[in-house]
Length: 155
Length: 155
DNA sequence: GCTGAAAGTAAGTTTCG
DNA sequence: CGAAACTTACTTTCAGC
Image (cartoon, rainbow over all chains, first blue to last red; front, side, top):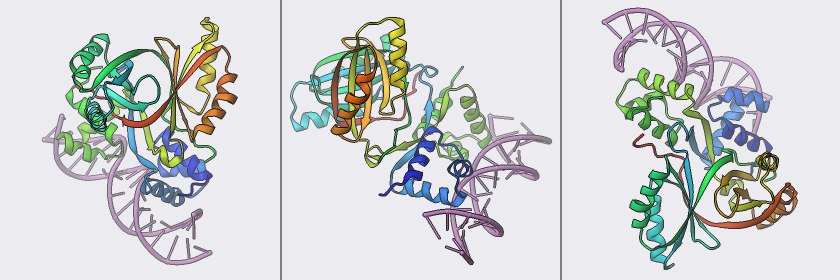
């Protein structure tokens, strides 16, 4: 799809605050209500906007203990990979999971309340997964930046 | 703040789809319109819900090349840390930045279009930052899970 | 693809049980 | 906490450019 500068601005605005009304967006973009409305619809229809979500304060819901858990599999057969990925996706503590290059195969971003819960997660859930070889945990000391906005200048 | 089971369910629903009407939420929770309305307001007022955002498809806006960039600082004086964190927060390619334990001081999650853009980012932006010692890039091969929902069972 | 106006619908407030 | 009536505001459609 062809996205012009207005679409990019619109995406930026909606990523910053999705609860803005069409009218508010229209003022900021210097267009009419309807024009903006149709552009938003198009972005949704084409799947460029995949959905809308509420941003929850991790501290306030007691999930501020964040760990990057690096995992190596024992063997990389197609079946092992499939099984591992399926199981890991089902764990609620695992916020994100990426297949990566380098020393380890996967990086998991795990959100729990505290070290005790992380220990429980490791002992009762992670080690239950099949095909797990080595793991290496990196603990988050502080969050410097976590943007909900993907920069979309130059296409 | 005291959050009961209903609040947690409500947060889950709003994280899954923030565009649901109060009425739709009320049906799913088995309560009245007003009750849900006031709970949402309370969650917003208390900052448990920090805001609402549109979820943009990275592939479709040409930002599917994701790299975890590990960074070590040369010296960890208070001033160096402050300067580094301030500068890195200003880079649009840096989606997330965490201060972490382990071999490296920081993990950056960088979103660009392709390897060429990543090279440009490294050469023209990252190495311009002060106090940077060593860096180590881990490339994302595949995204297994990226949840917008923080699991909030047991408080 | 844009504008402006009109019709339809939902949000938000208030009052009462 | 829930129901109903009410006010306001936004969404969605349409004719016309």
